[in-house]
Amino acid sequence: MSRNSVYWIYKDNRSVNRNAYNDMKIGYDNCIVGTNATSGPQIHIGSLILNMDSNHNWICIYENCGSASNEEAKIWSQSPGGLIWNFNYKVKPLTPLVRYTKEMQQIIRKNHPENTSHFFNQVRHGKKGSSHDRTINLLKDFINQNL
Image 1 (cartoon, helix red, strand yellow):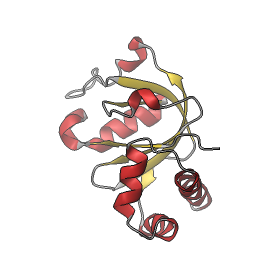
Image 2 (cartoon, rainbow, N blue to C red; image 1 turned 90 degrees about the vertical axis):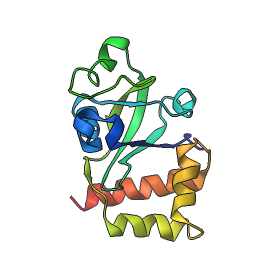
Image 3 (cartoon, one colour; image 1 turned 45 degrees about the horizontal axis):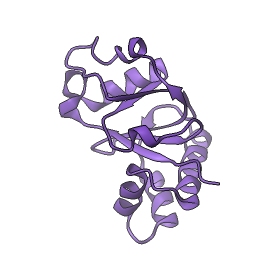
């Protein structure tokens, strides 16, 4: 059964000090992710969240634990240049926040040979599919085995 995986990116121009890594680090350290994406309200408890920066330099995989409170969501705006996201979720990190590597890209290509950008677009819009979940789980396992 699909857990309705999603892919959310942080962009430099909408992040703390105009650096997407800062938002990713704040989220990782505080076990919270936020988005303004239209897939935001579609995510369910237990869903996998593939979180990257828009330049595909950093990656982290989370499990959604439920909506974050308005108070918890303030972590974004409490840092210089940070915004409050429309949808905020408490999460359990399933991997550390690490650099995205060519080996990780190969995992996606092997499982989605048609086009890696197609994989990201499908997951970004909350498309259900066991192949997406399987790929994200393969990435999770790879990251955790190769620390």
